[in-house]
Structures are given as structure tokens and as C-alpha cells.
Length: 264
Image (cartoon, rainbow, N blue to C red; front, side, top):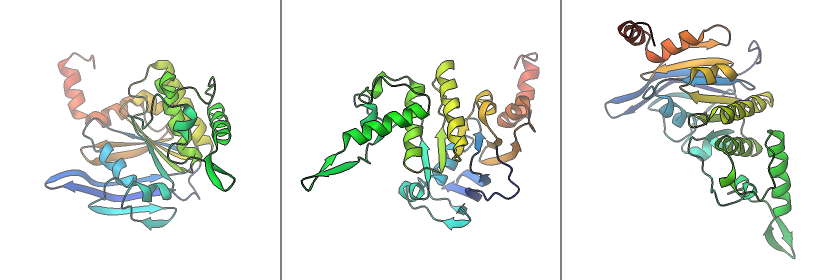
């Protein structure tokens, strides 16, 4: 975790508002993301997490607010604009083809080529070598680059997607509920991958509703509730109970706990 005394945020979202007709999805959310940090964005279903990351990644345009990248204001018209600014998103439902190899999935849409007799051909050797290097770096031992993605565990697939984003220049990596459908061992693998990526200086935005997973790797924590932030805390400054209360709205959880005899 870096000291922020003289570090400029790699991305800053200022007073982001998003309205869908009369529905207010975001009501003035601000957040600063720093390089080499894992910033956890927590909130229950309907808190505004998805809308916020869509604004950050260029999927939707904010109704109001500013997006500052490396000190400069940016306007994202689409996800490609965000990707060119170094912002990549790894979604819950990965865009991978199970029957294709890890290597082909890794370079899908960015296939390396080589010229033979003036004709461009897919450079399989380069793709296979780079894939194996990237996977080994993340602690994944493949049988070979031609191993089908469908044979990997859920955690390993997440690692492929994360590694692919970093390989192609992501400086801000948005992870949308990457551990939501994983078992204990697979979750541990993904959290270890987040730690490796962060140590390379990449900023990680970890969207989750699981407090334990957030506290395992997070450097700072922002809680969203009904389209508003309930504050940002540094690691060590907030307890799991405080985080859970902020996510649940505090009063509602206390009322429920009382009615259930303190079992929540």
C-alpha cells in the first residue's frame, strides 16, 4: 500500500450523478483511485455499484460530474475510450470461449501476426509463449497453451482475464464481483492474483458485497448505499462490523438483529 502524500490519483470521479428519467441511480458519488492500491467498492444489491463502474468504464455517460485521469479531464463516449485511457473491466460473466485454448482466448481480438512472403499470419509461437509466461507469473500452471479454457476452474478463468487486461496495458483494473460464484480455494487464488497485480503498480477497483473478501486485499474501502457514498476508510481504520453496518444501512441491520435476538 502506497503513502498518498505526494501521489496523484490515477483516476478521480467527482460528484458523479446518473439519472434514468425520474430514477436517481447515482446521487453525487466521488472517489479517488491510486496506483498500486486495491480500492474496494462495497454495497448491497441496488446500491449503485454497477452504474458507477459503467460510468467509470465508458458504458454509460454520467448525467453530471467529472472524470479525471492522470490529472486531465476525460469524456468517455464508449468503453473503447476508457480502454485507451488504461481502464479495463473484468466482469462476473467472462467474455471467453470455453472450447478455445487459453492462448487463443488470451489474444482474442488482439492476435499477434508475423509476415511470411509478404503475407500476415497468426504468430502462434509468440502467443503461446506470452500466454505461458503471463500465467506462470500469476501462479497458474497450465498443461500447455493449447489447454481449453473450459477445463479451467472459475478462479483460473478469472486470473486469465485479469492477466490479459494487464498484458494489454490496463493501469486501472475494475473487477466486478470476481469472487461471487467461487469456492474457498478459487477465491483465494483470485485474491492472490489481485495482490500480484497491485504490486505491479496497477490500480484495482474491487467491486464486492463480501466484507471478508474486501478486507483480505483492500487498501481502502468505499461504501455505496442507494446511490450515495457512506464514506471512504483506510485499511486498519474500520472494522468488519462497521463495514457491514454501512452496507446494510446501519439502522435496518440493528433493528433486524434486535428482532432476531442478536443472531445477525
